[in-house]
Length: 490
Ligand code: SF4
Image 1 (cartoon, protein in one colour):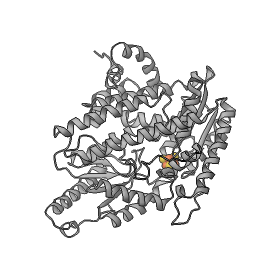
Image 2 (cartoon, protein in one colour):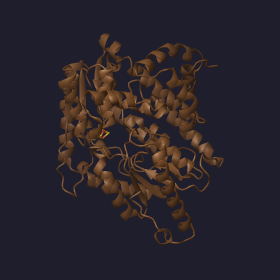
Image 3 (cartoon, rainbow, N blue to C red):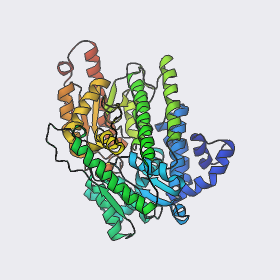
Image 4 (tube, rainbow, N blue to C red):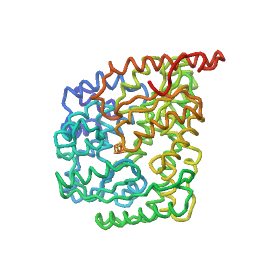
């Protein structure tokens, strides 16, 4: 039995017996380094996690364990560096396959990571404790009032707290966000001149009807840009990336994508729904960060979760009432999981339908003979590579496929990439699909600006409208006539 809150946390993540005893000292050290104390641990295991997560599922617990393994690994970066391990960082939005290929090629000689993403995905959804690190960045000059991205603030905070040392090389993609790459420059100029970054960019100068991944020259251009950056990464780390490593990374990605698509579809179609939308998004972390400890722990959790969801569906069980309306989102704000909980309290099920299910095109593996072009093509089909007009039509395809009762947009008002797109996309998707769309102006990672109490009333009224429209639809009355509401402007 677990004695302390630290041990209870490890139990939650499926560390038992000898393994738990062995990991415990590293876990206590890791937690302390990222600013978690005993009180935070008590709060997480006794209140926050049981309330925000469906711990009855082994798949969920294994996923918490996989994220914990990765987070502990990330607090050892300084020691890794001293041992001569080369540190390769990246940041979102990025094309992940190349990083995973570097890890496959370099093994233990290289630590491949998006440290800010990894620790954000750990600190906020499980402990609700990113704020002290955001504040460190704010005190250093990235002021609170300027609505900078909390993820970028976390990167600065982690550097200032000396959890994350300078990388040997940071490889970033400025495809859709310039703030992320600018922050590398900021860290280099102000705090750490050893913080070395290379940037891969693709100009978004396509015309409205053009689709990047269907234009051979653009695919070739991005593939060539990968090769350039690879050469730099290889020069600095001494790791040689061969075609077989790129091919293996590509396979991992495509396989994981197929499996998450199964989980999301099963969950979204089930009535009663067996899992929360925020948890679905957490299963998708291998699309937003490389796992230095390998994706097999996440994949094992995902496989387990798929089987558990099938059993729940076969037995007619779920965590929401039968018939509960479903609200889709872009990413359900998993880093602020109480948003999901408030929807749940109001009898509305969240499911992720835009960012996480794959479009028909995304599920087809590229089959060209040039591996780098395959990587480029694969990622230009994903949201990070698309222009705005293409992404919105992909949203429409996904909404038509998932058929949620409503759509929740927003939570990205600060964001260099999604901020404007959510505002435009909300209207466009609603017009094209007839699904009512609600927009909430808020921050995806940082809830210091809004409280549960403040948002509860809005979510209550959104939920009420969604339920009335669903009931009206079921009675055969056109929702627009039956309910006076103003979707898109919650
Ligand atoms: S602003 Fe958005 S796209 Fe840019 S780093 Fe932050 S979360 Fe990523």
